Image 1: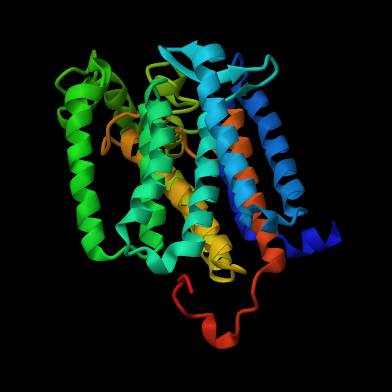
Image 2 (image 1 turned 60 degrees about the horizontal axis):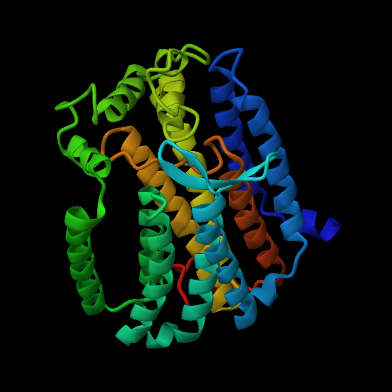
Length: 372
């Protein structure tokens, strides 16, 4: 355990904990009757425990194909299980309720896909120019996307596709292949619009293009979120004085709109602080990827970074009115046990990989991160 403590990336862990504490403080200000902060404190404590427990494990076993297939199969099984025993909330079946804990399989699926793609491209990154590898890897992601889409959980489905695209990019896809992928993506988006999206999902996209056209209907959430962020000003209204969340004008203020609730109370200064903490996480992820023992470790670590980046970009974007409302959480900050535990588990795996990372010579320290 002493070796784990000495080898811990405290900048990585400390930034994640700081973000979680900012979320806890924001939830505590929702009111005396709110149970969010007390429950979230439990999830944070468990998350830190998971981080250190994972840090003691030698994750080189994840390089084995049999292990990767097993992890991916478990994720698919949990997603399929939702259709029979999933708990329905607001028309969507996203959780498996165990009584004391409600598991969101989508979070497990995201981590499983990172492991699978890291394994797949760690052996084939030189052959990435062959389109068949893009198709095969895309098929793995598409299976998860379809299962999420049918729940329906369109937001998580889009993140899965974004995660696959991000890993493809860092694996070194040729520009010509990238153009083809964009074209396929546009065709798929058109197909989804006419044959796949439900009316309420189309309404969200329309409200994004014309946010003030129906502020009492489809554009209500986006309007209230931008009001909350804008009303915070430079220094915010103060902890516990966020009217949009306390008076419940802002829906799902503890999860999908935690950034708006935070920005209302902490202002632009607080928002900059929060984004700076995420910037530290991205910096440490890049540094740990640079010293990855093999291509697998490098791709896995960068894959976690891509996932966090997508979540932050989409969450903040939809909270300030730049992106459609998709119901996306903010890593380490939004209320919930599944994404909190999986998030700290991901960082714990990265921290564990530091123990068998390659030695970087002094003349390499200023080089750009890349996959050898």
